[in-house]
Amino acid sequence: MSADRSGIDTLMKNLAIEWGHHGIRVYSIVPGPIEGTEGMKRLADPSQEDRFVDAVRLRRMGTVDDIGQAVVFLASLLASYITSCVLVCDSGQNLAGSALFNMGAEKMLLTQAARAPG
Image (cartoon, rainbow, N blue to C red; front, side, top):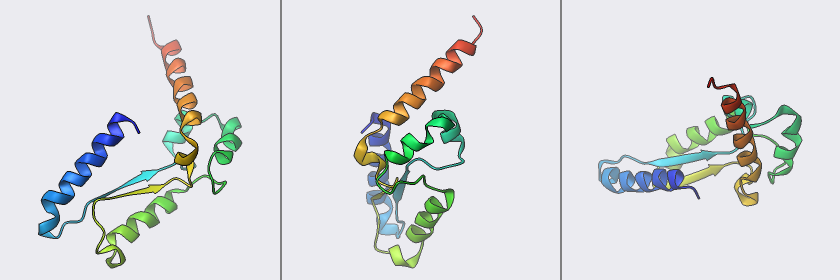
């Protein structure tokens, strides 16, 4: 787990402690690879999409509707007893690690550096 994600998880838990007695529920959603998003355009070479799909347990990319449905559930009365929850919506991608995403991020950064003036 990266330091930034640990920080977000800790913030979410602290807010749940502080605000819970006011009836405010706090949670975070951790999305995986979501097709058609700006993040995937930046991190994934379209020719390697099959490698991303192979790296997730459900063998498909997520959709923005998948994340939206998770949000609707957590905001609904069905989740009225849930707080301080980290809901991972990534088709099991985190089980295999983030090597493919790291490679995509490295490629993006190298491309940007090559384009930079100077």
